[in-house]
Length: 240
Ligand SMILES: Nc1ncnc2c1ncn2[C@@H]1O[C@H](COP(=O)(O)OP(=O)(O)O)[C@@H](O)[C@H]1O
Ligand SMILES: [Mg+2]
Image (cartoon, rainbow, N blue to C red; front, side, top):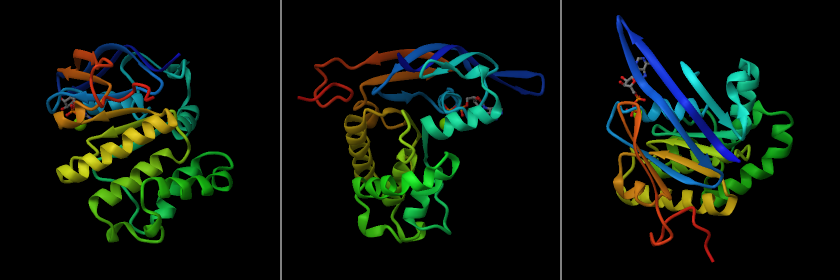
């Protein structure tokens, strides 16, 4: 069973008389537990593809399946439910709420699922520990470094135990060393929880550490390469 399945997935925008093919007839499967990097120039359709997979956008045509569920058959409420339960998001700008502390930020997505707060509080605390911020639980976002803020965003994205985490340029605002630490954290979460990770990145160093690289151009898949077992240190390959 594929975690995510895109079938002839297309998203078009109209700008005056012009039609922009932001995503153009893309068909591919992402299996549970994969660590996928999406690369390509600015404007190639990376964010569009990610937002479609995260149910933030409706496609113009084609189908998107999440865990074998055809999302085109879902109404707005069901889509919102599915997004809350099965998908986690991380953006370049962290998007933390400045009026809430670290714990409250991580617990935020629990509001959108039934009995979330009751069941989720221990999970939030555990995740904060796993991202290495146990000593920052009561801190506000303004008191954190960029790397720490992004760790909070990663913990938040996982609090409802989604099957899929989508990250759009998550290391775009931090230095190289911090970026690598974030990637190391993602690798750990990917291996320990078997959560599927799809990361959009400009950084070829980071993309090279994924188990699969999808390169977009003009809304189409230019290349789609899985790294073989020979790729030392590659992800998505069972570790002994
Ligand atoms: N809301 C929108 N309205 C019109 N055009 C859009 C919109 N969002 C994206 N586009 C266009 O779709 C194409 C793909 O954009 P995007 O998915 O953001 O690319 P990337 O993330 O790779 O930079 C670009 O040409 C962009 O200008
Ligand atoms: Mg983008």
